[in-house]
Amino acid sequence: MKLKRVFAAVTAFALCASLAGCGAAASVSESAAESAAESTAESAVEAEPAATEAPAESEATETTLRIAGLKGPTTMGLVNLMADEVVSSYDFTMYGAADEIVPLLVKGDLDAAAVPANLAATLYNKTNGAVEVACINTLGVLYIVENGETVNSVADLKGQTIVTTGKGATPEYVLRYVLSENGVDPDSDVTIEYCSEATEALSKVQAGEATIAMLPQPFVTSALSQVEGLRVALDMNEEWQKVAGSKLVTGVLVVRKDAVENDPEAFASFMEGYAASVEAANSDLEGTAALCEQYGVVAKAALAQKALPQCNIVFETGDEMKADLETYFNVLYAADPTSVGGTLPADDFYYAG
Image 1: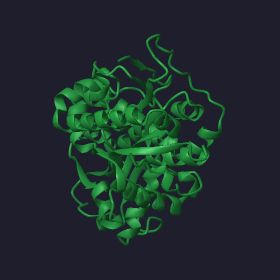
Image 2: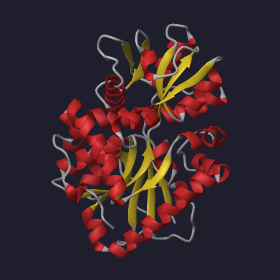
Image 3: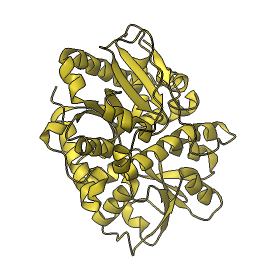
Image 4: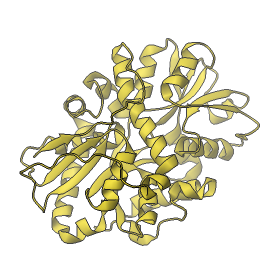
């Protein structure tokens, strides 16, 4: 199997000096990619392709399934399959940002990609249904952290200031929904300060300008080692499930329908391998962490190993996948229809196997 890595020319921020800081670079670039993709997915799909495609390998064939991944949690579950040297029919490419992947997938230069969930919905709408979602690969990776002991429930956030990222994107919609469903008015009962990057939010906590932040994994794991007294106060995946009755979705695998139709058995075989790869990611933390560093998914294996249990790597398909995504999309659509491409996906968006 040939693995090609293509990284964005500009990283989301400068690397911090410590082990945690190195890991933060990878995790925040993932967070930035998610926020950018989710808030600008529509323009990215409609724009003229500007990404640079990885050079084709001479060994690649027309039957090769071309799969793209992003740095961070959405690709962690794939790394064991990427490392499987007996697999010769998959061509994996790593990218630094989702907007590099979008034009390639739209043009048919990629067959599948691990992307933020609502970007998949936007792609479906903007390609007139040419893509479908094959599985959920990552559940919620957002956490409320506090340098203190005052927050033990969502209700405890009333009267507090929360620093976070993702204004106009999924993090904002998730936070506002969870607050509202717990009787906390996000406009009057709390103060939400949005930062351009997770490092900026963390720096406010480090400087004592704020004590509460909502951050993504694996950046949370890195942050806990940098700020004395910082703790995880709330798991937003758990809080979402309490009020929505479904799991909070972060990432999915989206695939072009023509790629599946060209060889349904080959894609079904890939899905079997993907499921086994996810199982290995959750059982062999050390081995998976080493592969995450090897393939550039997370900067350091030590950070990846600590973060993996909190990254909610899953392989969810079928009716369960559809139910969780439909609830998630309904919340996003109510907040901003453009966040899912203007309309909710139809039933043919969901891969049935």
